Image 1 (spheres, rainbow, N blue to C red):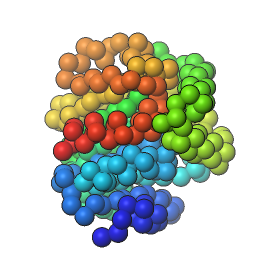
Image 2 (image 1 turned 90 degrees about the vertical axis):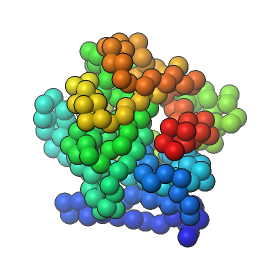
Image 3 (image 1 turned 45 degrees about the vertical axis):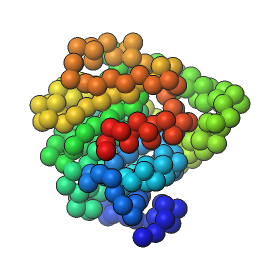
Image 4 (image 1 turned 60 degrees about the horizontal axis):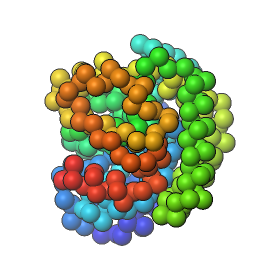
Length: 270
């Protein structure tokens, strides 16, 4: 069995409507859980953003999978007020699961990743054991695009400040910011379209449907998250079946302090 670094560096691909989609699949020699963990990246994120978290989960005995979404333009088509862009990413997630012949998966979805992960679960609920949404997009009420952009910029300032003040998080934050810039620069127009898709999406009814399918749903919200703060998701508090977990830190906490999240995920998905 190859070590983590070798497996992470091994390029794996699926053919998706004529396009090559890359994904990462790391499998430890002894698995603690029969169900792998899939990490759904958010806006500006790739598997490299979550490399340290994936390494820690691998060491703890979990198979971990993540995908790099393509940066080509897609037509801006809406369906039930959700951009085709997000449905496209949901279809890619399901295609990876199908390629790997996965029967059950636990999903950790960060930021925008919550939108396409929830859509994927809504399409094929039988594959999903549990959903853990971290700083999720698509749940803020009365969202506006320019307001959302302003909050994302605020988070980048938080990350920049964290690089100077938080030694433990410095390496992780520097790496994640580099990935964000590369992600955006590959296709700035698509980056803006993705932001537009996030701002006009609302997932509450989808979560209700998933609860009826007996999929466990948890939400982690950073206490200093300015991008998707809890105060802008007030109606969620009425859903008593959602497990809420406040976590110290901002919107970037999952990769700024992967060791904290690895322990939490290991306990939840063991």
